[in-house]
Image (cartoon, rainbow, N blue to C red; front, side):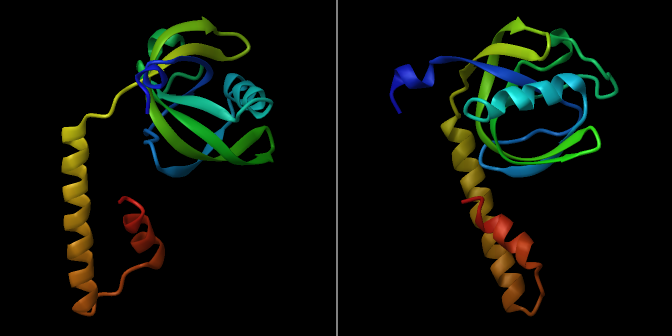
Length: 160
């Protein structure tokens, strides 16, 4: 990837999440019900379906301000939506980590300028080693007769 691409500033909708972090290369179903979150999802549907998911510093706040959010988040693509009684269940896929540089708007939803955060190679090497170790131990357990849930096995295999 070119240096210009890595440091390119993007302007994207921001969606605060109360508890948990969406990491790059993971998929998860999240439920959104706050007006700002719903507006951000609707806006992203008319463009590339990308949003930035950022964890709140204090989960119990119903209407967090930009200062109530961490500055590192994850660009996520909204893969599928299911609307139910004022809420949206969304399958999201983490794309890459970003840092929030500045908020451009807070109404009707948060919009911010973000820049990619470079992955640390040392951490990636450590994660690869841990995944290889877990995979080897899982194979050993299966060979010894331990049953393993298929979805769990496929999830672990996708870490590589």
